[in-house]
Length: 43
Image (tube, rainbow, N blue to C red):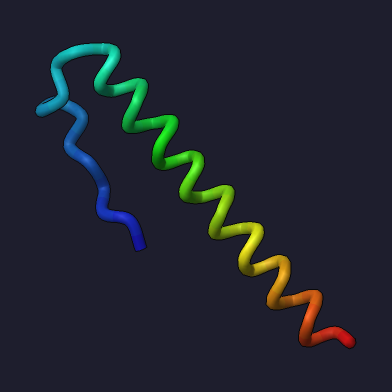
């Protein structure tokens, strides 16, 4: 799983926002993969 990122180390707001967007994107991809797996096992 993704490691928790220490947000205090990221001082600039832009960098923090970029990290959040990246993490959310990875989470979405992970959900899609698990959905596809569930779909395959049902049939």
